Figure 1 (cartoon, rainbow, N blue to C red):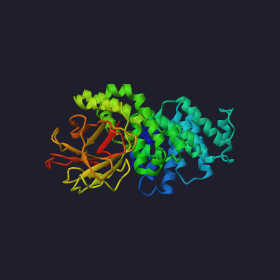
Figure 2 (cartoon, rainbow, N blue to C red):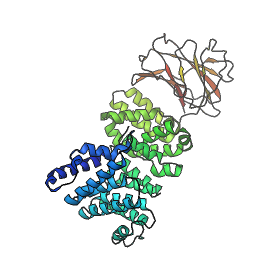
Figure 3 (cartoon, rainbow, N blue to C red):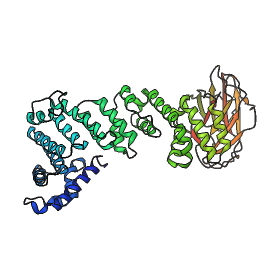
Length: 469
């Protein structure tokens, strides 16, 4: 199970506490031996986050008493912080919240510029809410924020704001502050902070990402939260496409806009770094395969230009030239068909039509199989691109038979404007057919010629053939 993001930092705090305890051990005469084992203390503190029963109330209470006594003897901010955290982890009771507030207040007094302690106070105050709990503790901190209403909730917000001023680029404290904002019901503030954390923190974990994405419940919140940084935006697209497909479809324009902005803003950096960065290289090529990249011209065209530079640097100038050509064209939306047994291709109608992005895999190398497309009325594609999704074909060994029909009844060989152009793209074959710009409506059948039964020629029906004008 993934570890809570705060764990590593608090583990360091606990290790510091253990070191301080070793230093001041001679001053202590109470049972705090378990603080000599920082791992045991950490396990007790975080056990509730694991798939195990939480520690007994008696054990946690004893541990909290030890922490308070140690903090009293040593008077170090980390120890007061630990005492407050342990207090909040006991069964919730008004007295526990007030005790935690006092511990965090002492920590802030000893280290007033450490945002962690201010956020901890805000967390405890958020639990108190607008009730009359802890009036003395609330009144004490209200003196520091005279402009704020003298309630626990209002002062919690004031402490959070002050913590962000203290450490504006600290991703850890920003993450903790976002959790408190959410507990206060301030979803917008939580999303804003988490977006900043994701932007600044290269170690933003998958667990943190999924927690962040789970907070998004509307398209308006998505617009506020989604990053426009590449390749981070791909994590959003992948998560929602796989885990929340209905919302992904409904909010697709927001995802498309974020990816488009990310590519445009990152273009200068990507052009310089992608060839020497395997993660960026893979991210750009992965982006090309996304349906959203193929359907949105604002994404596909700049992506084609970026990929052209990348393949040029990788020593594939022919494919780079094709991508530059494609970047100036518009993709044509097609209806698609697949006939597994097209024994009489010149006489057999195309049927079982699918939408442009029907993703089921088809095998074009099978004997007598045909892929069909319908070019809509008024569209005049000049480029047909057929792509294999597997790596088993050697360049230049496959030919295509393209058949043409106006009525989907009688098909005749289609005369291309030039010879087929063959490419090997990351070990996968692509074949370009230069059309004569014939204006739709019409039907095309694509079949393999001299495939000779070697390997396989497979791809999703939506990706195996595309047309551009």
